Image 1 (cartoon, rainbow, N blue to C red):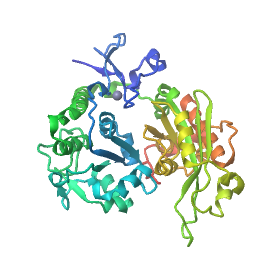
Image 2 (tube, rainbow, N blue to C red):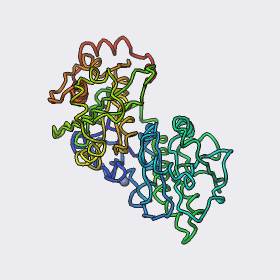
Image 3 (cartoon, protein in one colour):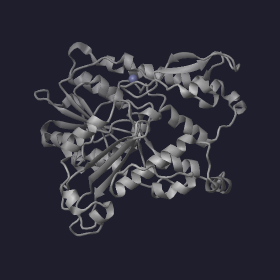
Image 4 (cartoon, rainbow, N blue to C red):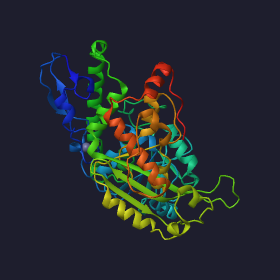
Length: 442
Ligand SMILES: [Zn+2]
């Protein structure tokens, strides 16, 4: 059987290119994939089930409260399982970030530390069978690779200090499509199914938690086998420039893209009175509809002397800002299910997530995309503009945040066009071709 994949945009017809790919509002994955029954150019593509497995989800109420803390990098993993678990378990929350010290849900769980446990694979843990059954417990689950989970513990000492529980998987992980570093590692959703089976054995319900997971694994295996078996055809495919490939990706998702940028009240690193950074200005723009969002939050900590200068908003303007709650409420009104955030680096996203802003949605780090494309690293989006042949999009938002968002939107709009290359870019590609991409910074 010769099958070519519709997801491979090199082979997409013009008609496919302009029709938006239907995406699941729950998990954000494709509902439909287009395949061709053979390689001939006039074979019409047929629709098959896409990567979304939400139709296999059974909603499973639990007594146990589950707090999924996701490493930001795990968010981009197409075969991650935390979102799937969250959709199935109504008594669960998913938070994305690195430092959860200011996250209200995490703080609430920590304040009941007698009934809060961290699920973490490894030694130095007690078995789940030993957990008390006389109280409602909260289970903190770290979602990411084993290394990312360890990093989260390191960055969150209060969570690291909680009692840890573990279980021995009864059988090896079905998560064969992703390598795990040790035999006690399983996917997040498999771990939850095992632990919930022990904690809430009534009705033997939690096998069903794995239905969408098994469907996803089966599909992924099929996909890998097909790609492997048709690898010999790869050489025949026309080479599409990376910029054109990125342009098609952006065009397909255009209506869902929301550019975001934050500015922080940040103290100089070595200042004796230094306080943790906090978001004081949050701006966003949806290029498809030109809608704009702005929130100024009054500082919760002491305002650093340099902050008004850096964020280019006066002390008075900052102190007159709203509360974190008002920011969250307004943001919920602005965003829509299925949104994809576009940002330059992840610092301000993580900072906002630490304040509890709901951001557990797919995101595009434009800095990574531009670095791959131009094979050089830019500190700020403004620095990349000339190389992209881009101009800021006027947004009438104040401060450095407004300026940086205008540049981000301008960069995104120029990348969507795709075929316009500046002389600088042509030169950069000619000089840098074949050289490795510089390593990722913060
Ligand atoms: Zn779905």
